[in-house]
Length: 110
Image (cartoon, rainbow, N blue to C red; front, side):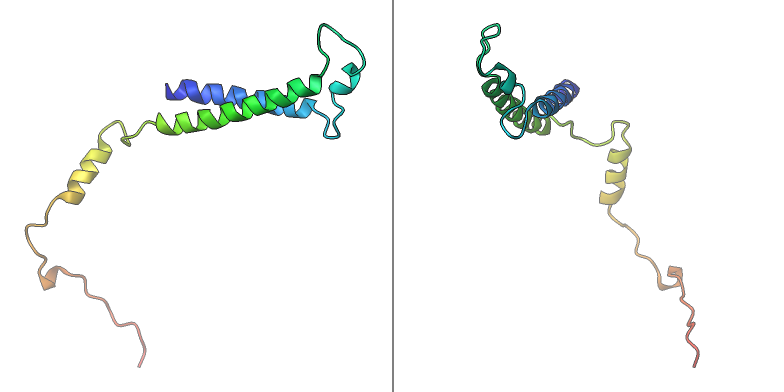
């Protein structure tokens, strides 16, 4: 499920990039060629591109939330994380004696 959502999100990102690049920032773009004529029922291509941009943007936001929810949790699958957690939580039974501690040499010159 997670990988399918990631692939769909990548496809939506590519489509969103293409649809934004098609648009002209000054309001022309593909709409400028079709404003006066009716070609295959398309009267306002700018409106279509704007609606497509909004739909793809909202879809990308929803996909980002779904990916975050379906993110696999639990760490490493081979059990190394569980073993490390057991070692961390293991209580210390014997205290260290002072002779077992490392002795630091005084390196300052007097």
